[in-house]
Image (cartoon, rainbow, N blue to C red; front, side, top):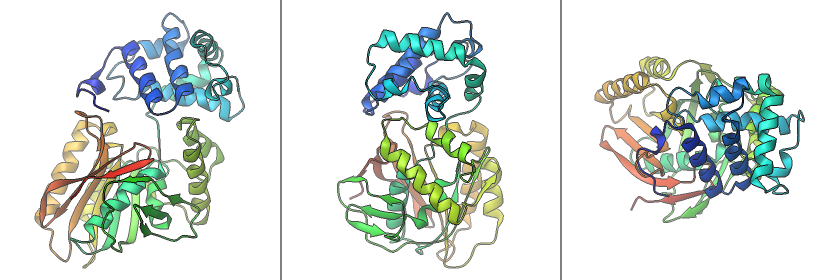
Length: 355
């Protein structure tokens, strides 16, 4: 799907809501699209949630504002507080005027409950994205030592910091324990990635507001950000909760720039490749922190050696094409990012591009 680079810079609230609704439709979530579009019916509402939505300060889509409140509305259904939107998600109610009226009623009835959902971006911690990340490691393992120390930015609940415990089938290349409750088997397009044997020897992450998967309420909050039509995604959160109950993910409460500075300052084991990685999170990192991370990685790259290499693996949105692209850079050796793949934002498919 091609979009202009200006799409994430939309400031008009109605325009952003309509864009997000259309994006949900194109993503196979028509019920969610109707609920998001129903936010337009709030423009003259005096509810505090409505006033905050239509008085939004900032870049509405870059801030994922429509998805913030959409998570709160879905949470009403998941917690049983009010299940009426369930009929919309199940396509039993399809009349947009009826949905508009229901969304307005819910926001005005549960105003105090919904308002805090606007305080922070959605934490769409998605295990399916690890398909691209693991494919990047398969490619890297042909070029650097295949023992990896992994460092994740924006880990949320740490679901992707457990990827060494997942089973992957990536275009016929199988990695990980087949006994895992988490199977990641995306539709694969293009050539298969290299059939190497990456070994994750350490993996940890950071988040400014980590989610504790052992807390049932926190797990439901994660599910709230998932479009209810995406049943497989719900199942992956359940599998992640099961794995976290065995060994919790290692996620520290820390901002991204501070985490990178601290991690790069640690001694690095010989024969281990240190890898910074992240997926669909870069847009939420403040500009000054983004620059600090680039500077820190550039400085660390200058001292990288064949025995102590450094790599950067990212699955992020190309703001010019709106494709979600997998880029990998490594030092010494690969000074420019290699575009390896593009992928569905939730991991349903991966298209391998590297020849």
